[in-house]
Figure 1 (cartoon, rainbow, N blue to C red):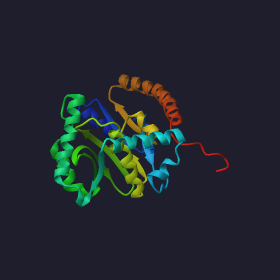
Figure 2: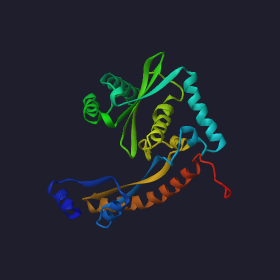
Figure 3: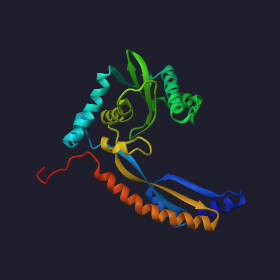
Figure 4: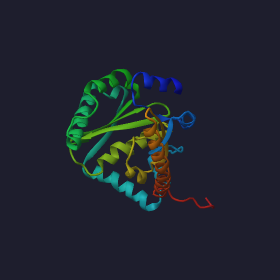
Length: 256
């Protein structure tokens, strides 16, 4: 396969080939065939047979546990109600509202309406309704924010998010805490909330390695990238170790 790809790059005058988010074992095998192996770090949440969100919080140290409770309480104090919609509860109108939030948030932050079209989300609704979960926030019974997730029996993935009002801590509630509660209630093992975001660590998302592989047709460029990856990997190892130190979980004594 790798030899064929190299030949196709030459035939089609393409500069490079990239494998993204591959399994570690596959990445290691690809690296034996000149497909450079690169690490990155994501933050994911793992369900350790928690019975409830409160049960989950008992694994936190006292200060971090109080911080999470305070964040969630702050949303309630601002008279915001948050609901999770799925299956028959989720309507086309809900999806239209989500897309409106999605566009407005991109416009505010980036000056464009986002990378995905309304038709894309319509197709998700038509073809994957049983795998969609939408978190919607309401104030005075009026929807003001939403976050979209996709899930199966094993993993919850997310999340596209948008808000029409600035509400303190609402992003954390819709994008992280509601997802964690959903996983606990449905016995879902893993919650992958997307790339980046060190703020996820303090809410219990653990740093893990992700893997990609890369082949560049120009030998000198390929060698230069290989040298960069070697240096980058050492830095990422240190970064992951430092991130692990920031996790909110309390230390278990030998007597427990």
